[in-house]
Structure formats: structure tokens, C-alpha cells
Length: 472
Image (cartoon, rainbow, N blue to C red; front, side, top):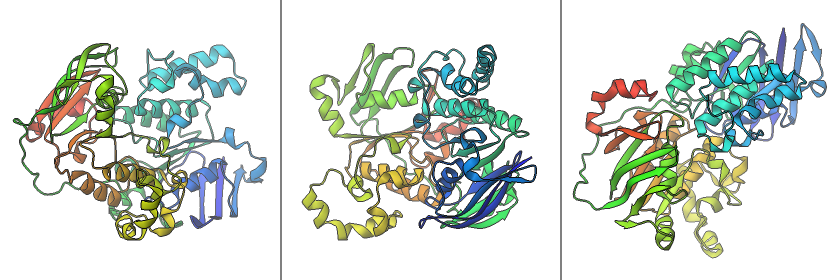
């Protein structure tokens, strides 16, 4: 039996004395607000960073091993918040088999294991595809399977199930529970439903453990900790039948990924749901001209999309993707949020902008920080705020609340819902995020819009949503 002992671990002003034992075969849920130190703790345990104080050790059958002698890459797996950063294989099959081959396993056994895992995570037929062609949820499944394939003694999942629809999440959970006898697991999550399935619950706040207890207590914590989405008040009734189209797909075919024949009118808020890999992200990418149809056409403001008007479309449109950390380029949080400003304006307006930034959890010390040093949820906030402050006519959101705790979800939803006539396409696996605000729902499956209904009629289609893996 192996045990990881975390004793009084400190790291800068992020962690200030964290202690707990983690037993092989035990599943621990770790909750806490954005920026509380969860991901930093994960990286320290995985060996990606070294603690500045305290100690982490591995005990094997009662005998303690020095941390610097432990083969951490082999003993401890980590699935982070950005799966695109963790893939190294040229294909799906190579990604899953890469670690096993490096451990010296027989190639035929590796191939057999790869085929088994590909089937279990629902990526059959995609073995020869590049991981870069997969959706965010599919990449999460792939990276999780690749880490499980190596049978680590311990596995850290840092918000690693957030991009999955309910069906895909259930399949991954089967794999995780199957592996629990040999693999201890640390689930970093804001989802109380997920946390309740663990053996033990830890809660971290401002770099300290404030709660150690039963996972059933996950639902008793403040909205600060969890991602529970309270349904609020009656929604505002709107009509857009007389408004001109801003986006139109006419028999647009994007190879085998998406076939679309739909119109979006000015000021509409459309919630787009469906299973992982169904074509939702492809739709958003086409709406800003990142990909073009092989057949059919796209119209913007009732004109065919061409090279001549592509720049106009992009100047009036903002796209916030699932993995915000992949495209933040500002040298600081402040610079990123107000990226379009001149150096003079950045300096002149800084003081009067501080109260606004503090409203969204960015006090003066944090706004000077490199975005790369933020937690995943904090980076998501930066991406959203910077996009919204440009006042785009069209806003394209791909799982915009990923990694956010409940308090930040509420503040971001408030910011998004202040529409000012803006057209919004909002991709999510969770209907609760859009029920109060959307005008219409599109359900996408296998590259087709199989349901297009007014928001007021969504309950008539609950069975169809549930079968598709949509949460509500």
C-alpha cells in the first residue's frame, strides 16, 4: 500500500501550510473557489514544481521514500485543465500507447490495450486522427485514458471532466472507478454532484484546508465553492422575427464535421447544446470565418462571406473558446483585458478601472500578474471580460463558464446577459446556463441540428436532451 503524505506544504502566497494523507485506492474530492491554490497543489504533488516549504513524501508499505528519489512521472499522473497542452502523440492511438511503449511493454499488448481504451472512451474510428482534430471533450477523454493506461499509483484530475457531456462523463467515471483499486485519485472540481461520489472531501480556501469531511457535505458549502447554477427569476420575453439576419448558413457542409442550414437574427441569444464532438465548436469557428464550407455558403449581414468582408466580420465578432489559457497574449491581466488600448490610455485610465476589476475578483496585485500564472478559472474570466469590453455585435461563447466557481459563474452570467442588442451563440453542456437568457435552443448531434425550439418549449423535449447527454 502506498501513501502520499503532504505535510505543511507552502508555496509563495498561494499555499500556506497544507497537510493531508492520500492513500492508494482512495478517491478524494478537492473543492474551493477560483484562485484558492487547488491547481498549484496539484502541480506540486505531480512534481511539476517544488514546494517552498513543508514536505511531500511517498510511503510504501510503511517505509518512507525521499521525494527526490520517487519516479513521479510513473507513480503520479496528472490530467490538467488544458488537455491540448498534454497531448504528444501524432494520432489518438499513439497518444494512448505512448506511455506504455516508453515503459517497455510489448507492442502487441500495447495495441490491444489501446483498442480497449479507445472503445471505452467512445473514440472508435478516430484512432488515426490527430488529437488536434478532436473536440475539447474528446481531448479530455483521450488524455484521461492515456494516463490511466499507464496504471499510475495516483492520478490527479484537475477539472478534467468539465468539457464532457453527461454520457461521456459517465463512461469516464466507469473507467476511474474500475481503476480505483490500484490508483488513488484526486478530483479537483466545482461540481458537487461529482464530489459526492468521492470517498473523502477536502476544501481549500486562500491556500489553507478549511474542511476535511464526508463528500455528502459538498452540497452544504457556500456558492463560492461549487458550480451549482441557481435558476433565477422569470426570463425576459423577446421576439426577433422581424429583425434582419446577421448569420446564415445555406446548405453549408464542413466535410464530415457539420452540415448546417440555419439563420440567426440580430439580437438573438441561441443556446447550442449536444454531445462532445457533435460539431458545436465547428459551428462557432465557421461563424467567425476560421473555417469555410466545402459546399454551400455562409452569409453575414445578408451578404456572402468573402475575403473582402471577412475582416469586417471579425472586427464585430468575438470568440471565447473552451481553453482560454491557450490564446491570452497580454503581458499582464490588466494589459490582456484592455489589450486594444494604447500604452498612453492604459496608464491614464488604470486607477479608475480598478474598482470595476475588483468587482470580478481582480484586485491591484492580481492585475499586474502574467495571465499564465492564474488558475484556469481566472484565465477564463480574463478572456470573457476582455471580449465583452470590446462591445462586439456578435459574441460566440464555447463553454464560457468552464472552471468557474459558483460566485464567478453568477457574475459572468450577469455580464453576458447585459446584451445591449448583441447577438449571442452560446455552446454549453448545461442547459441551466442559458435557460433564463436564451431565445432558442439548437441541439446538435453527429453534425446536424436535430432540434431547433423556442426556449419556452424546452421542457417538451427533456427526453431528447437527456438522451443526448445534456445536463438540466
